[in-house]
Image 1: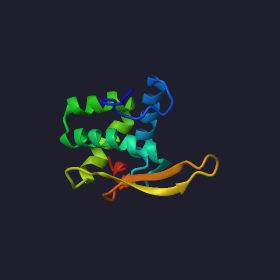
Image 2: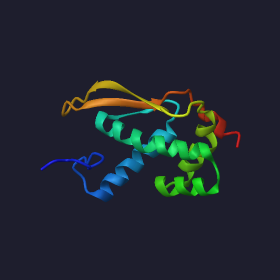
Image 3: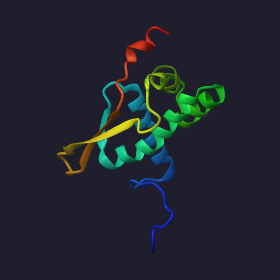
Image 4: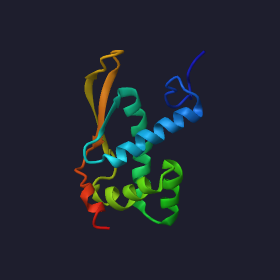
Length: 129
């Protein structure tokens, strides 16, 4: 058998579990946009695909795009933070995130990576709203 046309990694999980994992990682990255998060390298590469699309949607603005973010993230606060605080601070058209290798996990020797925003994000601007 060949894997032609199969997109994404499965992570040994069923579809609903995999979606929940990705949503949780994306919400964590949005909430910790100033520092980034550390996870396995495969997970970091996978959420980069998803969250860069969400950032592009957030930069466009508008009510329909806000509702689309809420449905994809399943969290109103994270969607508002992405659209109102993070997206206006991003000065580039694409390539919003960077992944840096962060060594190996002690228990199972899995390669770890830190995913963070390329631009400096200041989350203190959310307190002014």
